[in-house]
Image (cartoon, rainbow, N blue to C red; front, side):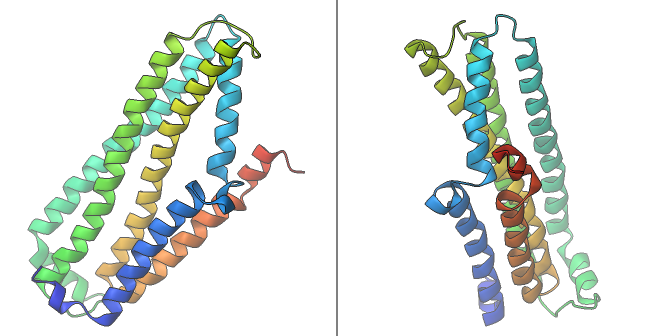
Length: 230
């Protein structure tokens, strides 16, 4: 709280752009009607098809392998995030040395220890958020494993089979969505690091991340493949 009086108008504006970009894009891609054709929601339809095909197979080794690969990816990010958080906590403990380093950079600005700690806290909060999302995604993938293990055998068209396939697809989508939120937190965490240099860098990086995420989720070749566009 002691750092708040040291925030300039540019700082407040940059932080507002940062949070507006992060929260606004999350709402746009996940909940708005304009985000229905994006990569996140398009992949959910394929998860339902996967669940339906899985229930038609008596031997589900391939499905177990695919889920194992997903769990491995999430575990890698969760473990990596722990090291990042540990490094940021160490940086908070050496804020005096870090302050002298940042002020010597070409775009570094004069500041004080309290303000620097606030900037580090924003960066730390971004990766703590990512860690919670990755670990929750991991737990949901474990629940998905249970659903796959308990899955009955049957063909699409049977109401009971269709309902179970929908449950499996929803569990898969919940886990995948939280993984995507963790990845998004990584992107904006990198943007938050720009505040260490200058608030203008923070705002510019937040907008840059927003553009990158939009292009990848709504205009990427990967989305064209899922849509089967020529």
